[in-house]
View 1 (cartoon, rainbow, N blue to C red):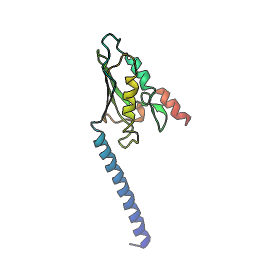
View 2 (view 1 turned 135 degrees about the vertical axis):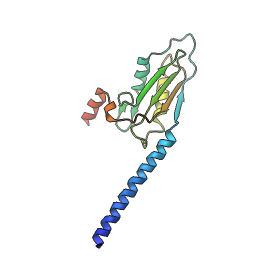
View 3 (view 1 turned 120 degrees about the vertical axis):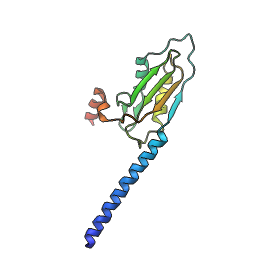
View 4 (view 1 turned 90 degrees about the vertical axis):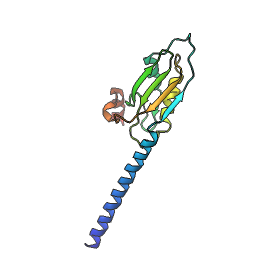
Length: 149
């Protein structure tokens, strides 16, 4: 093997090793976030009207992914919203990727925003990875915003 071929092979191996390291790092982050739950709020007074899903969605639209400034709801990161009769809110959300730099803060921002809605009690936001997020989950509004960039 020539010196040039040897150097090219070394470069390819380095790229493979870096890709493998990136994948392993992402898997580790995903495992760490597997059972991640953010909590906020407190028990809702019994005489207070319970918030509606529309109220919760409006609050979700105030929380933006800081990298692209599109809210988490229009990004399609919110998979499920459950509002119980006592006002407690349970949200299942995902992130765009396991290695997402805001993985540690975005779920808590979601919980905090929803907890501010009148008629909510305790709020729990759980990170889920299935199904994986894809760009098809973007709302029409989000798609329009991305086209502006």
